[in-house]
Image (tube, rainbow, N blue to C red):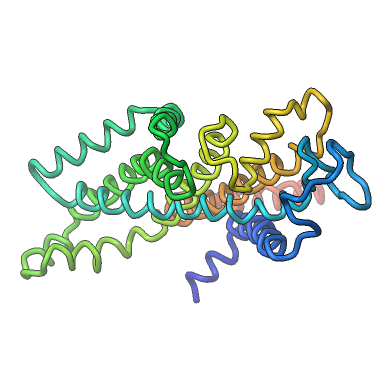
Length: 302
């Protein structure tokens, strides 16, 4: 219960969860209930009206219907890419932090190589090669691109924590009792990293959503799949900004921004939980503020 109270009282996690839940709920409802078929054609470039809340695009599609249908795939790709990236980061981070000798050096070198390569340029190169080889960059391939470019930062964080934990006395004692290495890693070390895992996962979700949107915006994805990124791609391709058709690009752009803010707040809250020094600093700051107010009131009374 005390752990749940920490989460509940954390204003960052509460605010972020509220934002993400509201957008996800809109996406779930909109995926099943939308006013028109997203691919149905009406008159082109209609402004917002009673019949078309966000107007229509160059092809005559109802933008509100496409927007509602596109929220959930964007979140799904972000979560799937983050989940797969988290699995790779956990595996490499745990093994490189716990192992010694040649295994540790090889895995550390592997992490450092991927850290040196910027994520977006690497994703662009991989996506371009897939398109050049006539591969269909569907959701699965897009998730793999996100995983390849996003796992290394989380692996480095996990590795540093495992290095610190594995050198503690109680872990050394457990090793001498003959406990297997897998039991030590998954029963003793991993439970102590859960807050860090949550922090890394939420950061990976933000990275995944932004990278997925960026690739689709650049035309390096499967634009036939309706998502917020594909809506922005077509809005950019047909000069929605130059034509002043704000209803085409602002709603999906703001939704992506709010998703980033929501998951970012959750990540910030988990960082506070993972670092007790931040909580101590906040409590000390709060008590210092209360003492200052008491001194000011005492001075006014005198």
